[in-house]
Length: 295
Image 1 (cartoon, rainbow, N blue to C red):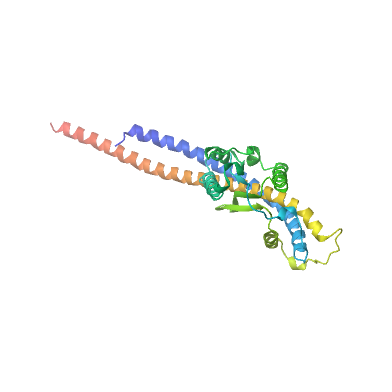
Image 2 (image 1 turned 45 degrees about the vertical axis):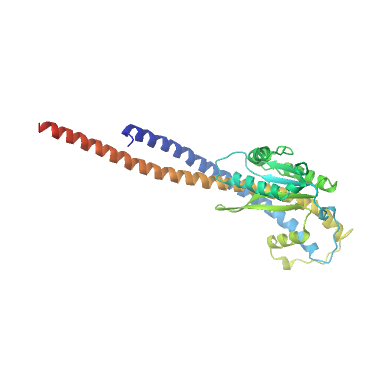
C-alpha cells in the first residue's frame, strides 16, 4: 500500500490537473459559443442563396455547367478538415481513419493521382505519416475560419476541376448537429449534383410554397444558375470549415468535461484511500502504545 505522503502528493497532482481541464472546458465553451454565432450570422445569406437556386431548379430549366460534368475518375482531390491542437477526444483520429479508408478506396489510381488538401495541423501530420505530400498548408484557416481563405481554396479546386487536372473532389469533415453530436461526414464536392443541391436547399428554405417562380430572367435561367454554382461551391467550403471548427470546440468541451469528472472521481477514491491509510496508521500506533504499557 502506498504511503500517506505518496497518496497526499497524488491527490494534490490530480487537483492541479482538474484545474487545468476545468479551465480548458470553459475556454472551449466560450469558443463554441462564438463559433455558433458565426454559423447563425452566415445562415441568412445561405438561406437566400439556396432559395434563389431552388426556385430556378424547380422549373424545367436545362442546366449546362462544367461543374456538373461527370467523367471517369483518373485523378482525385481530397480535402480533409481537422484541428491544429489535440485534447478533443477522438475528433482528429476519426478524421485520419476516414481519410485512410478513403485512400484505400482510390488506391487503384496510384499515389501520384491522389491529391490531399489538409485543413488543420493534425490531419496534415496524418497525411505525411501515410506517405503522401500535402497540397499546401491551411493551418491558419482551421484555427480562424475565413471566408476569403475558403473562397481561395474553393477557387483553386474549381480551377483544377475545370482544367481537368482532377476529375473528382471529396470532403472529409465533422458536421455539427449539436453540442453532444458531431457527425463524421464524407461528401462529394465536385462534380456538383444539382438534384442533391436542390434537396438540401429545400430542407433549409422555409415556406418555399409562398415564393413565385414565374420570373422573366435575362439572359436566361440556365445562365443564372450556371453563374450561381461557383458561389454555392465557395459557400460550401466555408460552411464545412465552420462546421468543422464548431465541432472541434464541442468535442474539446466534452472531452475536458469528461476529464474533469474523472479527476473528481479519482480525488474521491484517493481521499478515501488516504483516510483509510491514516486511520490504519493511527490504530497501529495505539496498539503499539497499549502493547508497550502492558509489558
